[in-house]
Amino acid sequence: MHIKTSTLLLCSLFLLCACAAKPSIHDSSVRNNGFKLISNKQDHTLELLTFCESYSNLTADAQKKIFASSNQALAANKNDLVHRIKLAIMLALPSSRLRDTTKAQSLLQDLLQEDNLSEPDSALVSLLYEYTLFDNKQSQKSREDTKKYEMTQQKYDALLQKNEALEQKLNELKNIEKTMTERSTKADIKP
Image (cartoon, rainbow, N blue to C red; front, side):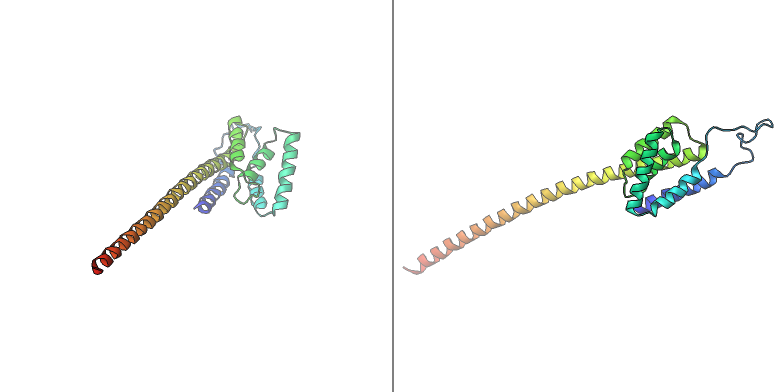
């Protein structure tokens, strides 16, 4: 179930970004009254999607090296959106060896609140955020289900022990009754 959901979300991400990256003829940011408007928000969606694909196919050591280099780049420039998104991707991807969806969710939420992203980048970050939110909810539900199962198992084990103790007492009572019956039949036979 978890793999199917992850696959579905990632496919949706690719489709959403593929559609969002194509400029529309009626896009007001391209032309407005004959003047070309320049947006200060760059579109890094294709680069980020390529990074998702390549990072997923790396070995654990290579993933750790890229993670470390991204952290160093972020330490140098905390406002670098691309490295912040890449870091969130590294923490969110199911194939990541450094997976921590709680941290990823926090990073993605910060990115969305800052509103510094282009529309396609914002769509990508929103999709990743929704994925991490869903994954965290499922993880929490799984932990709760595990706790419920363990409690039920403990209750079952306690009832099983109680049943065994009661069966043992019943057998002891049957043995006492049998002994008493044998004594009474022996007493009846002797006279």
